Figure (cartoon, rainbow, N blue to C red):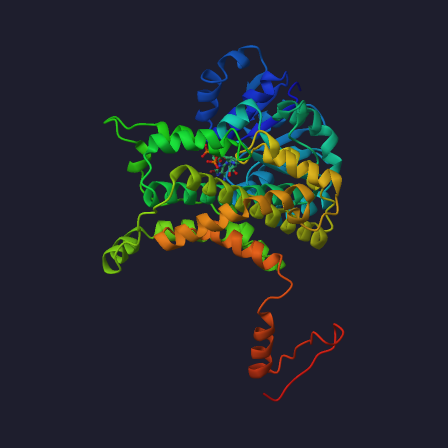
Length: 471
Ligand code: NBP
């Protein structure tokens, strides 16, 4: 019994997390369903660390469990869904009450709610832990969002905080909340990632197809943006992508098929927002934009039937590029404001004590959406933990109003040119709607009353009194 923790699932994430843990002085037992992958790992990437006995390869769950210190910490890093339930069932006969099972995959928070409760009833501690940062993050410092049964947190905290990314010396890992809260926050992170990526893609499209900018010019533009308020991992890698040439010297990005894949966490986020009645318009549009992109054949036929829409944008390129930067920045603020509003609503729904400043800090480093901007979100929640929306925080209010003229210019130019900008434009529509004390919903209420006698409230009477008219 010598291993501090055991990890099952030696694919990309599992292998790199194990190496990261071993680097930080923890002894890790490993197991994989296809046991040849244990050998491949032990004799390959883990060679040095396994010869110093910090990584212990095992070929059965029984042997794996035997190597673990008590209370046993068993981490699953496998495909989300049935595989997690199957593995839990396989492990339980070898574990004893008080042992801790940790699911580090991208599980749906409702599965984590169910598993936490079911295992608690049997005396086991279950943790649902969101992990972001991909291969590189897992190896050198991911963002880790732990939730589940709080009794397990002290047992994993030293390991997770040691291996997590650090920002200003603070680990990007803090307790999130009960049951599925950790996986929920990871799901919102992924939804925001969809939004950020689509906003960047739309900005690229306006500049590339609307303004005919070369990929080299785009690389310089994005590199310059990365030194300002948009500074982030995704902007940085986008500049690098524009610089990459194919074997024939042409830009590689131009040769990549414009059909975006998805694994489902963006969709889960939007479905959840619909269920909770929260207007998460930007991430919704980002998910639909990926759906539209995947309709390659249908779009190709339509481009011939309806003719391609792009009309060149005539503008001072320096000024116009700045307008796009402002549109991208302001839309990003809207997306995060919507995401945090959804988390606030979810916390109320499931009685989770979410600390929004701590969540912003967890995303500040290690993960795909890491950015300077998240530091500002943390500050806004530190100043007012009860903030109704980020949009009314003094810092963001000012930033949005400053960006507004460029934002409108960019969106209108894109619309006139025929560049589809679903996220940039929905962000602007949301902003205009959110700050409007008058929306045309009075007419919707009149229509509902007309055809369905659904009644309406009146502006000149107290709220809560309902009227019906024989139209
Ligand atoms: P994958 O999601 O590709 O899963 C592969 C692993 O799951 C292998 O070890 C495989 O074993 C195991 N597995 C499967 Br599939 N079904 C199993 C079953 N019924 N019983 C036991 N093991 C089973 O690996 P990954 O990309 O490393 O991701 C791991 C988790 O982390 C996933 O939930 C993923 O969504 C999440 N995640 C991934 C990333 C990323 O960048 N890749 C980032 C953040 C989170 P085998 O070798 O025997 O087939």
